[in-house]
Length: 165
Image (cartoon, rainbow, N blue to C red; front, side, top):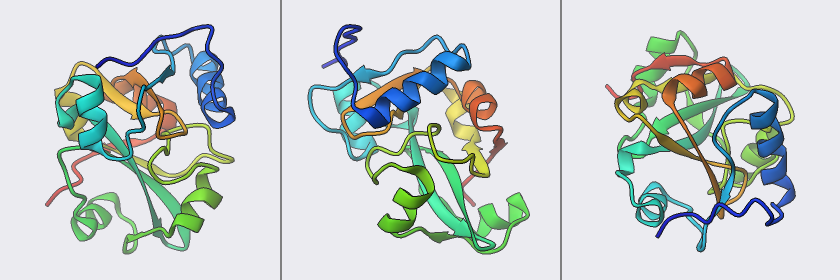
C-alpha cells in the first residue's frame, strides 16, 4: 500500500512544521499521510512497499550532555561505541522518551530529521546512500516524506558515517 499523496488533506501540526522546512529548503519530496501508523522501520517498509534498508530511522541519543540525532538505515542497529569513536564524541546513550520530545518536539515513532526547536548534531548512516530514494518520518507515525541520503546530510548539516562496527 502506498502513501496517499493528498495535497488537500491537512497535516498534523508537527508534520506541517516538517513540510515547511522541506519547502523552505526546496526539497521536492512532499509529506505524505499513511493509511496506518508506522512506528518501526519494518512497518514503514511494508506500508511503502520498499526495502527496510530504505527507511531512515531518526534516533535520538545523548552525548557530551546534549541530544544528538542519528539517521540510520532501518536495516541497522547503531553500534554506539563504534559510532561515538568515529564521530569523535563521548559515549552515546539512548535518550528517554521525554528527552526525545524535548529535543525534537516530536514523539518516538514519528521523529523527523528536521522541524525541531533547534538543530541537533546529526549523523546520516552511509548505508542510506545505497538507496536512490529513502523515506523518513515527518513528525508523526502517520506521516513520511521521500528523500535521499545526500539531501538528509544537506538538510541536517549532518555527517555521513557508518553507524555499525
